[in-house]
Length: 103
Figure 1 (cartoon, rainbow, N blue to C red):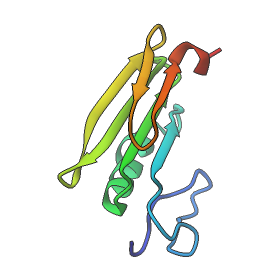
Figure 2: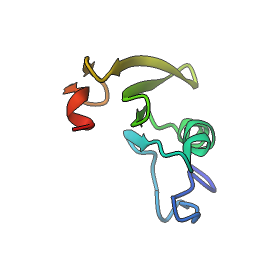
Figure 3: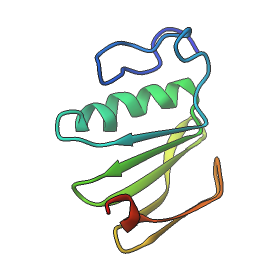
Figure 4: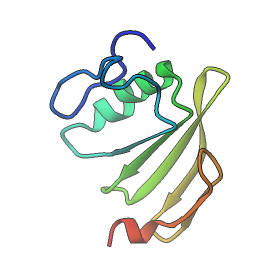
């Protein structure tokens, strides 16, 4: 990975020193002030860095969306709402009752 991997909430860029390899799993919790950054800029940076899984927790919609890296780009692998069970096999096998995330 070269240069910037992503931007932190403090506005400071992660560099190779701060984030020497792409994370296996990146999870973003959307907020009104960073929603567009998380869904666009950070997603693109994680994709470029080669992070195999990118999850977005949306407190407003009460959903979790999972993207997995395939053929150089993210493809939606799973999505679950508040009354559903999120079941994912990569990068870790997990079963999450989504309602518990918002309790």
